[in-house]
Amino acid sequence: MPARILDGAAIARHIYTSLAPRIAALDQRGVQPGLAALQIGDNAASQIYVRNKVRACTEIGIHSEVHRLAADCTEAAALKILEKLNRSPRLHGVIVQLPLPSGLDARRLLQSVAAEKDVDGFNRDNLGALVDARRGLVPCTPLGVMAMLDDAGIAIEGRHAVVIGRSTSVGKPMALLLINRGATVTVCHSKTQDLATHAARADILIAAAGRAGLVTADMVKPGAVVIDVGINRMPDGKLAGDVAFASVSERASWITPVPGGVGPMTVAMLIANTVTAAERIADTQMFSAAVQDALTK
Image: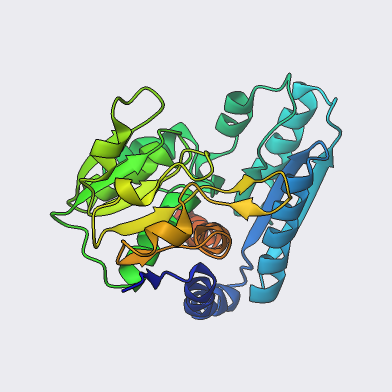
């Protein structure tokens, strides 16, 4: 029996619906969630990603801003904009659109985003909170994968999960989220020997390596859940994932397509993180105001 499809676009719509009452509650407090993106250079894919994020914000009622700099801008100019966005009371989420032009220190720019507004979840404070299973802002793609598994009612506790890829944005936080939910996790990467053997042991297999067609049917345990995070542009211009979809879908129990799988979930979780950040900032401001009021009485 062919695998059932984990429809990221449909699940994302459910998430937007669930966010509506939270946004309305913030509106009652005089708060409209705000998200700003810093885009450097004219990378075509980045332009599409930013446009999709702005569209999602508009549709759900979130304020959005895009701040653009030329590819040859100085790092100081980028840091100056980020400092301004960090201070803006209008904004609750700030992202640096990747990839960045050569010559810019992506790590330095990402770490310059205030932790409470780091809706991409890349700040060390948020990554540290994830390691310690504390409350923080979680990287959007791994968070979206977890939401997909939960939406389908797929058990995580006690299962063996294999994550292919060890990036800070996907692979490592993905492994931590699964560990925090009780899975036994194996992380594979470019130096892993006998990848096929490790992958074939997975109850939940997550491919995030950035190599088109890396995961083939012989690497998949019958009945496994297969999540394809990869988005690869092929020579003909079409998109392909890290998983050989046609053959693997005949072996898996659940599978995500590319496009239409994890991609829409990443944007949805970015919006969800922005709403969460707005709630937390509003609560902190209310608490601070209450303390200040008590001290002046």
